[in-house]
Image (cartoon, rainbow, N blue to C red; front, side, top):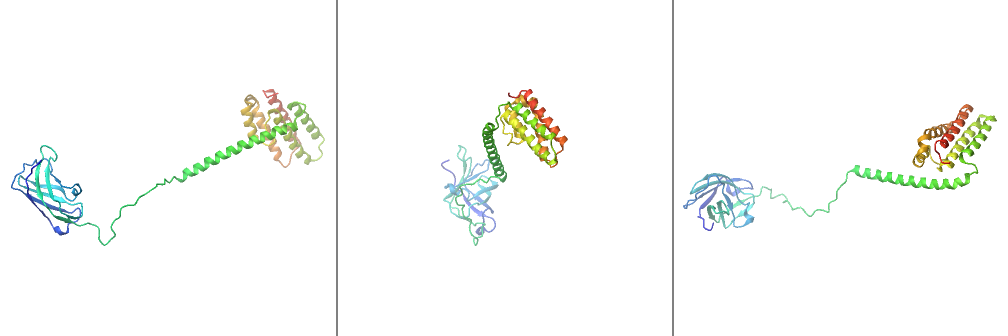
Length: 294
């Protein structure tokens, strides 16, 4: 639209000298050259400079006649405003663009901020950002690392124990097979039971029985039975001798458990010791007869 009529406009409403940002006031305009307004469309204000766009804005159209218009307007930008012109247009940028222009309007708007107070300052540069992880994450990480370290130490310890076991095996190696060596050791323990004179000797015999049975397990399955716990012995048997564990694992578990109980008792009776002597022999024979290595 290259040529539009020039109208006259004035601002009204309250004390125009004390307008603040967001305050509502009235803009009335009249022109001798009529404009055929589209009553279904709202006019917009167009400024010569883009930065003046928020200095004045139409809120509501109160009258839209061919020669007179009345708008309720407001200002969002503080300061004194003196644009070269303002255009009131419908269909801006289209072939049906229509409206008028008024020249050199002047209005002033005060800020709603207290001038006695410090003016807001722009935010300075921020970053680099540091993401704070929750405490449970660090606790879980420490726990996981602790478990990993424990597993590594436990594995290395077992490797070292097995290495020492192989060295001990050379010291405890006999000309007899493991089962027959245990038979021989068990007969010696049996003779001691028949000749025992004091109850204190029973405690010593119970410790020797536990040791001889564990030596049998050590020789037969090459597991550090003298150092490992009952659970570790059974786990190793289950992993490396599955058939033996399946058929004789329960017998071994019960024998190791009862020998441990007997070893920790203060008072050991002869009947209990004789029963454990028989149970140890039965367990050894079952471990051999049910698929143990020969």
